[in-house]
Length: 266
Image 1 (tube, rainbow, N blue to C red):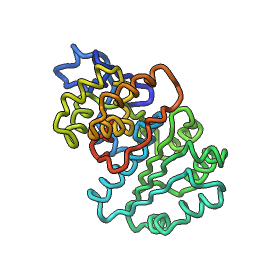
Image 2: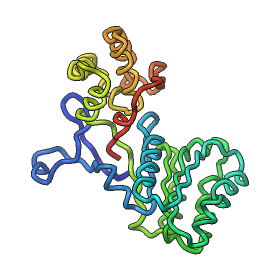
Image 3: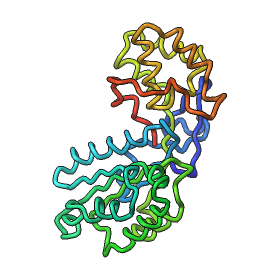
């Protein structure tokens, strides 16, 4: 959804999906849009809290770009690994892919993940990126996607991107939690009793935990291993509604299929 937008939840705490035109008079206000509505933006900023699926969204975007535009170049970088501006500039702006695009050879899609993690090591990263993109002679055939935790995003960089790409060509969106249908769909891919699983997370008051895409994996794994009642109850006893700290039970489950649980409504 747009960073200044709003969304609503149903009576059990699941995100309400985008309303059809015929439903808009009856549904609570929601500015949530689907992922497909975003990919046409030449410059896109994806924001969200931990566990909401920012990295997944970046990887999914790159995968779709490779399928839809096989002639284009894809440049994926994790900004969290850079501790110096020299290393970042060399790895991004002096990369073979960037030189290929700058020579007018075709379309380049740039995916920069974990802007917030880079800030911990390189506090000038916002001004650095703004300056380097600002120096480019043009941005024709250059598509940029940046992801960050919401609180750490820098409006100075957003302003620089809007100056370069143009106001309407830059989209800043917050990744939203999962709808009931998305949680159910994720469960159906792994469980034979998916409806019962959804009913149990509602009864145990852990919907606010389960609607975060990457955290859905843990209760699914517990249920698959037939320790659901104990595990779901344990999740409920440390419900994220009652604490701002990360729960130790949020560790990602190895082998969990996230192709479905990561499809959030940006």
